[in-house]
Length: 333
Image (cartoon, rainbow, N blue to C red; front, side, top):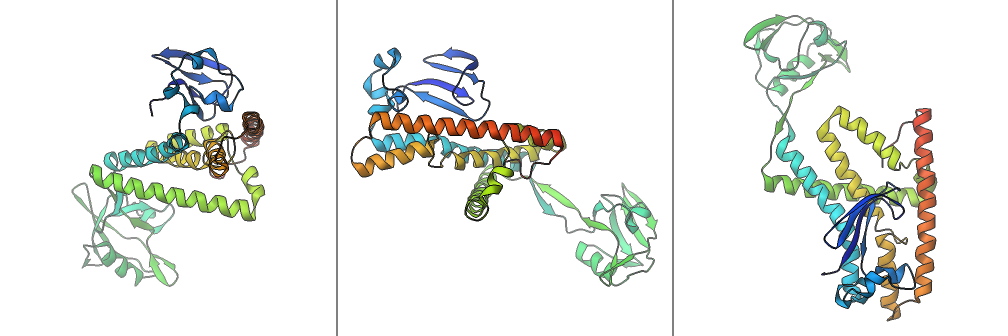
């Protein structure tokens, strides 16, 4: 839109931890480590009564407050929109590099349940079952069909492992009247082409959006107390992120995608000074066919910021209490 960007900061507005200037923009981080903000020339019209010296020297066409409402709306939507675009890209990267899990229809062993008949005779992941009691098997369904008909019986498995042929004799357990060996189907990772990965990334992101919107609606309408009790702030999200990253890097990337969708949706809430609050003010001005009183807008944003900071302080202390007491974070978001 050609606006002058004065600041690009990580964290909510407040004292700066560090910053540096590149071109006409100051980059850095603040002492309130949650979210971030972009400060445009001319946006002070909603935050203070007088322009600062830098804004006075900025051409009108490069200032936010001189733009038509439709441009202002696009600018406010751009942030949450990018919160929806980034997950598509992150998920696509996972699907291109790691791939998507698909079932291996061969008679290849996946997970082996601890304490199961399979574990007792030393069956391992990757073993391929060739025959059961002399019956040749090629597919997973064929293997399962034979096993189901032999509850409580000792069977003879011929398996292939790293080129060697082994004979194992487990005694099947009985589960719901069927023979139970204690193994799961093997899963393969199929890497997708970029256009396929982007499509699946878009579909999964839309699924995240639907899940979050429906969940928020149900909680706000039926159980609003849970929203405060079970929410996690910066500390909680960091704790959950670290735990996921230690277990699986690619699951961590998917978690980042989910968190981005969360942030994008919450940022659209009609609550100043969030983007949704600014959009709400623009909507009221459109209905009124004129700008709201500058002092009123200033007061609305000031009250909104105070409430937002108070909520953030509460959430941070709640996160710390949960960590100290060992209370698990329900969803990390």
